[in-house]
Length: 179
Image (cartoon, rainbow, N blue to C red; front, side, top):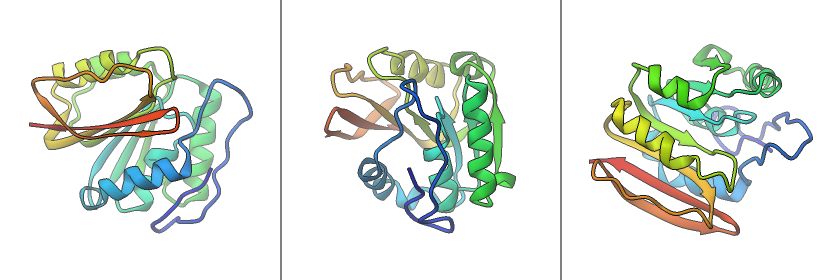
């Protein structure tokens, strides 16, 4: 797992062994970030189900102004902190050891880009997206980038349009934009 591009490009990120985290593959991450490249500079980013922080750190490396990381596992949060410090991006981040849904219910911050990579096969995307919409957490033309199992249903929402829906192996990337 590494940072692909930007000021920390090429940096190898730390992770922990185990089956409860599935880092985004580099080719999937690269494709995802190529699609949103022009939206990143100066963006305020939210990384939900952060794992080891790969998506939020990549966004910061490519010019995002700040990123909030939401991860319920304390050990994973420590790794995110170490990765941010190693990339010299820690000052641009806030880390929250919290359940994603609880965070979304209580959040008052609006974001330009929200990354979401919940555990596969658990159908957790829909509830998170509904809370994002319900609590008005996206700025105008804001994006939700959702990585999920290719077997999960892709939901449609009145407030969002799907601008990209692409399969990579057993992963599906869905990019929504606020209408």
